[in-house]
Length: 441
Ligand code: GLU
Image (cartoon, rainbow, N blue to C red; front, side, top):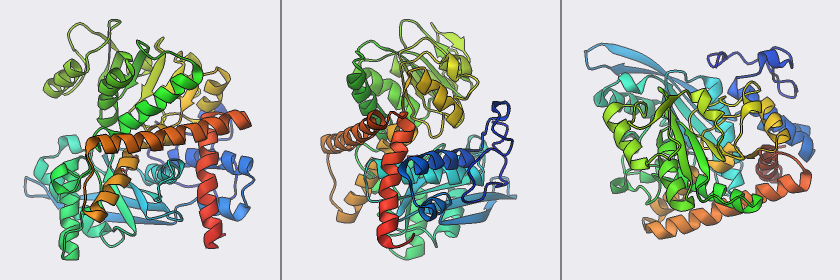
């Protein structure tokens, strides 16, 4: 994570090497935006993309940097920095979450906005990609402080978001309650209710049934299809989950319920736990709710986050942050299937190693696209003011995820490339077509 704070952009459009330190693995690139650009470069090469289209897709179309003064509970004013990046809207309004994180950087937000562009494209929903972030530590803030910060952010970015322009959503450390405050502030600015300006809202305010666990559920549909494609029986398959936020926690419950996975290890930012007998999702969730961490659950052995990745399991679900699987540990990964519920958990060098070792990776912007897919359903329901029941949401989500999975799997087989490159080829190809048809390049 050493380069997480680096925001200097040394790569010019059209330049090929993303690393500022040469190609040596001694200094593997960890800046997520340079990684996103390198991934795109590989796809552009395979697709023989026009240089002008490649140059356009390498950079965000627009970005806004904001400064947010917020009155804290002790009466002082604290000034926060925030960002909103609208990466590409050739296929529709930009779409993507807002993260609250102390390590947020503009380059992380740029990378996440790029990945949102490919994510919406790979599941073939009519949206572009965007992302937002605020540098803050929500764990140390009161509900009142979080509300004032959320409203301050909307007062600044309100001028560039909207139904037809850019539709935010939750991401790391942002919740349905935060979405409700943001929608409310935006509605005040507009002078009327605009539920559709943001997704991931509570059900009482125009949220969609099934949005809460949609990221994990979509991922489980992909793992199910991967199991079929590879001839691996998933019933009782040992599984490790890194991260216990929205994606990881629901993956634990749904992995067991939908696929019969045996989850033997889970972790959060404070460490991990292991039990060969399998971990009960309710017991872990209750323990974390009471103690603030999964660590210490009776009957489990403590393990580290890095140790979790190298466990001898069938399925590995990275569900935390970026850059967890690098050239340093990729060779030690024993899982047969990796379902990336996090954004950007694997570096390009690690991708090559995993591919060579026959590990089947379901890449992030495919595996975790369930969240934005149900967000899109939420936008549609808000627009018609008519709401779907849960079985209909699940059925439509399954259709979208299954079709996307097979488009990527077939592309990988046909071109003998790893799944991430195949996913890029599917997604970038669609965005490039839209760009071309619009006459942008
Ligand atoms: N933040 C989620 C993601 O990374 C969801 C985005 C959305 O629903 O717009 O996919």
